[in-house]
Image 1 (cartoon, rainbow, N blue to C red):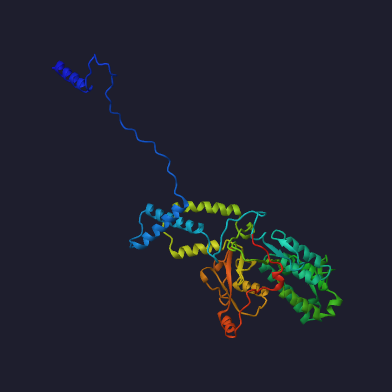
Image 2 (tube, rainbow, N blue to C red):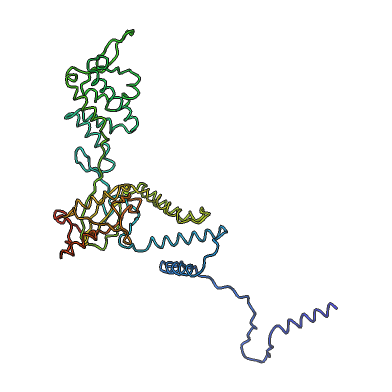
Length: 443
């Protein structure tokens, strides 16, 4: 039996060897082809879709979603992440598209000294000296200017020092009110000796006045003198501020100094608008801003942009419209300054720097200062023709005009109708001649 199976196996091998060949044949011997397992072809690395393909896919997806009825929202974590990825991709596509006129631009900040910055930086003007200062120079310069002012007006200088050098506004108010009370007592009781002197070691004086910079200079400037006086039931004398005879003879001066002290405000550098006028330019919507315009540093902003991709994994629910609007407002509050351009009827551009929290009325006033006919009413239009009303007076960061924006100037429609009825046309050139004489090219 074993031999029988061996013969069957040999016969099967012989038949599987292919057709036979005679030994006398002179042709080349060919081996029967053997079936080899097919090997998969090497796959080429897949190329990512181009920007144009991504934009086309996003547009097609949007059209498809509009045609199909909306069902229940995604319930699984994978579905939610997929939907969030689509939203982020759509936002990135929108942010990468060319800006329409009037749309505010949020560029990546560059370091100082970069070529073609829209403005060289943020600068301030000292109200005492008129000097133009960088942000890191303003506090030291103002303090130096106040100290120099002691040589010309020690009373005013000491009042400025009290309100400016001390940052805690509540402590300043408490100290100023206490000084005013001392001066009121002198004015109301000119004949009583106890009101003409102030004990320096008094608890109220030490806690409210002595701790403030500038208070001792104020007392000496208005006529008080430091004197050592004996104290009853005490062996050693103590220091007092005693009002001098010259100051007692002119009580109205003390009253005037008191009002100055109560009505004073801290001396702060004013933001320099850096007003500039440009000829008509297709670059009007391009804003390349220095790092001064951002609360965060340039590196922090770049890092935050990189972290946006990681937000997909952290989000577990889709953002509603209210959530997105709230997030946008939070983003807007990161900006400290904003650069605004206004396109005038002749195409020229008026540019200025503002605080992001300033109100729209500041921009209207800035424009009126530059107009040849500043009494004529006008309107400002943002992107999409949105009217920005001076009466509503929103802050720039509340209406999305940060960190930069291009707006359009137009005369009030009622004024245009009246001029047309009178057969007149408004002048296309609306700026003062002295501004047109320093007009620049926008590059």
